[in-house]
Image 1 (cartoon, helix red, strand yellow):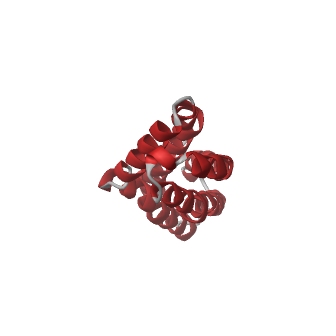
Image 2 (cartoon, rainbow, N blue to C red):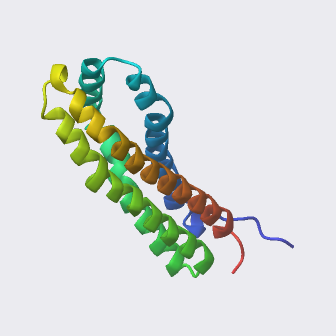
Length: 167
């Protein structure tokens, strides 16, 4: 007789938390790529700068930080749990997801945040030259972090799918 899947014993809770946190962060990056920046690009330079500065200030909140930093923690825990349970295939997908998420995390830290800080350092009324200088690299870094996070999300979905399978 076939045994039912036992997700609780396969470490699925941490996998699901990882999937949720990485998915939320990937969604933020995606929203910036397809809506926020294109919308702001249709505004005046002063409006673009003022709005992006306010967004960057407001995103520094407990909910976003819980997902942004928490994704690292729960994904590492999920990988460890899968490995210890002998779910090597799931563990490898989770480790791949962790690596991909770290790429996106790094792109945020070394790419987008320093560019945001350059914009914040000038008065919105005089932001035109800064916007012209940072817009293309900011979007490039955002593409990197979006694609890396979405790829991590796919890996976590695959890990969840194989985590409950018999060994």
